[in-house]
Each structure stands twice: as structure tokens, then as C-alpha cells.
Length: 154
Length: 181
Image 1 (cartoon, rainbow over the protein chains, first blue to last red):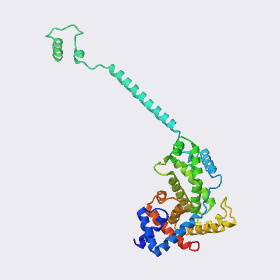
Image 2 (cartoon, each protein chain N blue to C red):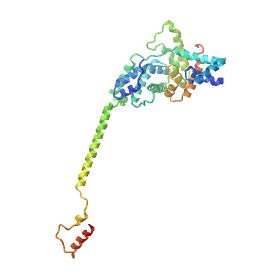
Image 3 (cartoon, helix red, strand yellow):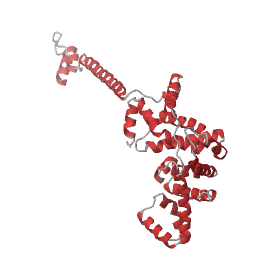
Image 4 (cartoon, rainbow over the protein chains, first blue to last red):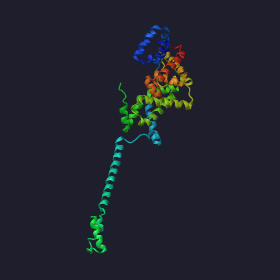
């Protein structure tokens, strides 16, 4: 491995972000190369400085202040609570209600359609043209000829 | 220590349980405050920024996709919020960090911690001198202790870029902190 590529591995090695093969190659190189070893020690020293830095803690009451801010925005009608949606079961109830209404509507529509269809009888040519309700006419008359015609069609 | 359960929190929040969000704030307030303090350089601005971070998180929590980590998602909001603060107020870490470190709430300075305090101040000065992208990256690594993959997720960049920025940041810090090493 070249020194240039090893120096690029210094930080990942310190941060335990190297693959095992890379880690072994890095260790082997810095054992042999004093220049790279010195560079590694310097960067490791920087990393070690941060270990001694005291981590900040949030001021006391931070969470209470956050919740109070959210509540204040709600009371002022601000959008902070706009994203607060109804509980899940209410949403399901709403959807179920809409589905029930739709089904009722479909069923009602079908019932109406059926009723309108039963009141209409398909046209029966023979019946509509039939003159059976009337007294039979002699065949040599127009009416008689008409009766012959309808009989043929049947 | 009980592992924070992202899935359970989201389930409770979506069912209308506001205490779930308060649990999230309590769990992450130290980390978010620390991030804001290092990015903005003083505790007062950090406190305001941290509150803004949680308010934004509240507004966006219903849109959060569980395939990501809640932890890194929150950090991303934190980084973006602090960058917005800096753009608006043109604050510089260098001018504010030294005097404000002494006024951080809850910090006592016993005699035997003098060296540690000096080191912290030197680190803050050195961090302030870094380009912004390098500073954010090294703070997330060294202070917030995020992994390379987590940092890449927070900053919406590649692991390779994170590695490169951390290496460059440490080289620059090495020069700035020669007397401390």
C-alpha cells in the first residue's frame, strides 16, 4: 500500500470504519512506516482531545418549554397542531360510514332500477298488433289481411 | 439503559398520545441542545434553536417514514435549523464561544477542571475556524458520536464524502490545536 492511500485510512481506522482486510493492511503499514505512524499518532491525538470535552446538557425545563410552546401555538390557532390528526379509530369509523352510505346508495339505486324495469314489459309485436280483442274480421278485409300478417310473423 | 423504540413512539403518536412526543423530547433534548450549541456557539441561541427543532419535528412527525432512523431524522432537522439560524443572524462561533462557555447553565468550574475547560475552549475556537461543512461533519462525529453511515444520512450525502470531510477537518484541527496535542 502507498503512504498516500494509508493516510486516507487514518480517520476511518480511528473511527472503526475500516473493513477487516483494510484494517490489517493499515496496521501492517504503520508498523513499518514511521512517517505514516507519526501522522496517525497526530490525528489520534486530535480525536483523543474530543473525548475529554464535556457534553452539554439541555437546560432544565427544556421539554416543558417545548410542550408549552406547542400548546400556546394551538391556542393561538397557529399551525403547530395542524398536523395533529384524529385518532386512527375515528378515521376508520369515518371511512366505514362512507362505505355504508355508498352501499346504501347503490342498493337503493338498484331497487329503483328494478322497479322501473318491472313496470315496462318488452314490446310484444304480436300482442300490440293483435286484434284478438276485437271481433274477427273477414279475411278479405284490411283488418282480416292484417290478422293474417301477424299470424305469419308469430 | 432502555433502548428508545421508534416504532412504539410513532404508533402512540399517531393514536393521539401526546405524551409520546414529550418522551421523544426528553430522550433527545441533550443531544439536540449539544448539537445546536456547537453549531451556533452559545447556549441562549442553542436553547431557542433546540425548541424550534422539536416544534418542527412535531409538525413533521406524521410524515416520518419508519424505514429511516428517528435519531438521524431529528439530527437532520437540527442541522438545517441551525443553518437557518446562522443565515438569519450571521452569528460566528469564534466571537461567541469563549465568553458563553463560562455562562453555560449548570456548569461548575472547579480548580482541577481548569485544564479541561481550557481544552474545551481551544477546541471551540478551532472548530469555529473550520469551513461550515467540515465543522458540521466533525461535530456530528466527535461530539455527537454518530457513525459515518448516520452522518451521511443526516447530511444527505455519501459515506465517502463523510470520510473525506472528517479527514480534512482533523488535518485542519491538527494545525489549530498543535499546542494542545
